[in-house]
Amino acid sequence: MLKYKIKTKKSTIAGTGAYSAATIPARKKIGNMEGVIISYKEAQKRIKLQPGNVLFMVEFDNDNIALDASENSNELRFINHSCNPNVYMRRAFRRVEYYTLRTIKKGEELTCDYGETHHEGTLLCKCGAKNCRGFI
Image 1 (cartoon, helix red, strand yellow):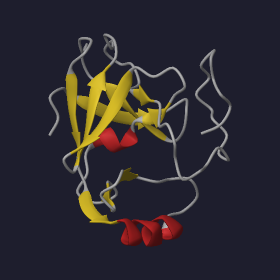
Image 2 (spheres, rainbow, N blue to C red):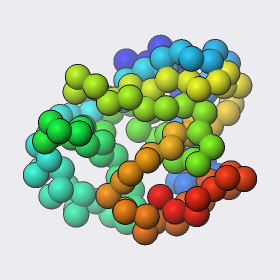
Image 3 (cartoon, one colour):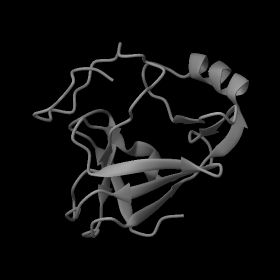
Image 4 (cartoon, rainbow, N blue to C red):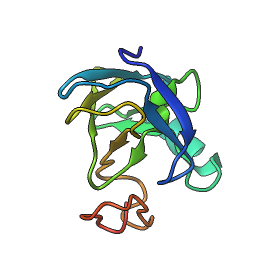
């Protein structure tokens, strides 16, 4: 469920990005990323089958489950990584929620610091932020 209108288009960071269709105030919930809940074991199988670095999978700590956003999803699955993000992700109660860190202007790409990923620091980061770590 989205609380604000989000559109998708080509990203300058990677592939497709999620963009605000209107100004979104600071510290507001944007919405929940939709998808299907699967077991961690099934998530590992699906990750191996997905092409390249295109993944729409969020694992839940200590629950042995994941959200696969490649099925039954919404525009939030296209939020790209940035080392200087404007949103943050909260994983709780089998939901992946996104909140703004600051006011986001209409037309601005939504970005989130992915934190630890299955890439284990081997995927080059292309966010372009001044504080870019250089990897995801």
